[in-house]
Structure formats: C-alpha cells, structure tokens
Length: 325
Image (cartoon, rainbow, N blue to C red; front, side, top):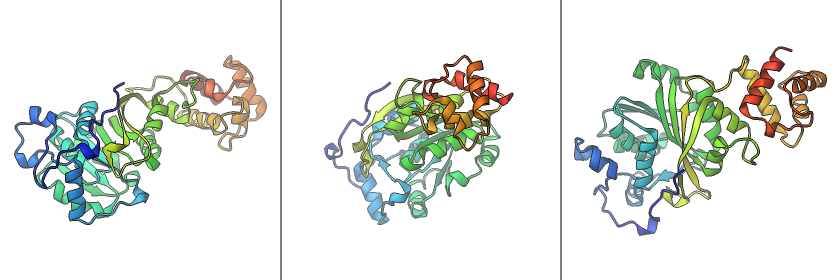
C-alpha cells in the first residue's frame, strides 16, 4: 500500500495567477499531443478558489462536497484506475470538473453525473474545451447506468471513478455491484475508515457486512492514503483511494445470492450475539431456532460461533445449507 500522497500543504503552494495553468506531470510527459486549452489546470487551491469565486459558489453540506486541490493525488487516481484511450468512464460527483479534466485527457469518453444543479454552469465552463465529456445533472442512484453502457460503450464493461461523499459511499458502491451493471472497475476516494473495512478479513474490528459484500464482487486494493489538507473544504478525517476490480465471477459458489447477503447482514446486525441468535432475531429471515442450529452444526461450526469469525467461503457454505431447508 502506498503512503499518504498529498505532497504539499495548502499554504506552501506557489501563487499562480488566474488563467496560468499548473500541469500534472503525467500530462506533461504523456499528453503532449493535447492542445494547451485541453490541458487540465484545476487541482490547485488558487484555481479552485478562482472558479468558486467567479460563480459565487456555496458549499452544500447535504451533498458532502470536498474538492480535490492536489495535482499529485489526481495523477495517482488516474494511474490507479488504469484509464486508457479505449475506456468509457463514468464519473460520479465531478464537482467543479477537476478530476473530469484529467479523465477527459486519459479516456476515450467521460460521462459525469452531478447531483448539484448549481455546479452545472461551472462544469459547462471548466469542461468547455473537452468534446469527449457529457455532464448529466441527476442523482446517480436514479441513473440507468445499464442504458448508458449500452448506448455509449456497446454494452461493454465501463470504469467508474469518483470522489464520493462520505455519507453515500456504501449505497453507491453496493448499488453498482448489486444491480449487475457492466462495470470493470470502481476507483474511488472514500473515507479512510471505509476503505479499510472494504479489504479486511475476519478477526478484525473493521470486518463486517461491507467487507464481505465488496470482496464477493471485487478485489479491493488501497492505492493511496490522502490527508485532509488535500481537499477544500478540509474534511475532519483522512481519505483513501481504493480500487475495486470486479471479479469475472464471484470467488464462492452460492445458490441464492439474496439469501447470502441476508445472512451476512443478520450476522453483523448485532455482532456481539452468537451467529444462531443473530439469524433467529433478524426480520428478513424466517428460519426457526432449531433449523438454524442444525444448519450451523451441518457446516461444522461451533454452536457459540459469532458471525464476525466466518470467512466469505463459510458464509456461502451456510447460505447453501439453509437454502435447502
């Protein structure tokens, strides 16, 4: 895992006049064929403040807005996502278009979905030079991503890149996986604590339903830790860039996927209870105590085992046993 990747504090940035473009190294070295007007210039405190002041933008807490202001982190995200000129990229929450500029330079086409309508005029401005970007003003949870993939990428898997609001990280990621839309990978900036939960295994305090759900669908990898001073406004906690590369097929064979995730949720709903009690008390399951205890015994688990001790493979085994009862 890479260490923290924000290389400068805000106060150490050299003043750059509005309109003067500070280019990220990846674009200096690898994107020389791009015209100057298409080179990304956002990603510094100065340029971010200038565009926000130009449009009198006010941050809205309900949208969890924190804009990246470090070009090295932006470079790291593009590299971690492995974006190429063959790729169609769905960006969630483009903000003022900072990462969108970098994505537009690296990908064949970008579709950016932004929920805040007050950011649309800003995006029309900052993305004006890029003819391979489409901006949609909508809630990503209500967007038909399958339709976008079919119309813009011939139904082939797309890559998702996002700087996600902390409050909606899990619904967005799980929505993408559970809807089975064609996604090759998801590279997202999330709260450090959430990123840690996605990749841990049993026996740790961070292990839970999110860990199992993510690992069922994808291989997680934390590409970089990002401290609060890389954002505007500055969040109270650290962040991390995590890459979720979707499995071609799940690592376990399960007969009833919905039952599997009900069992997982039940097991961590009251994580200090035994597995048997957790399953018995969960409203989404209708098995009686005797059936649950018999299934646990058939799997070879100890009667007093807790859900937090089971691996994904063991949860799949239990789901397959209960599915037959």
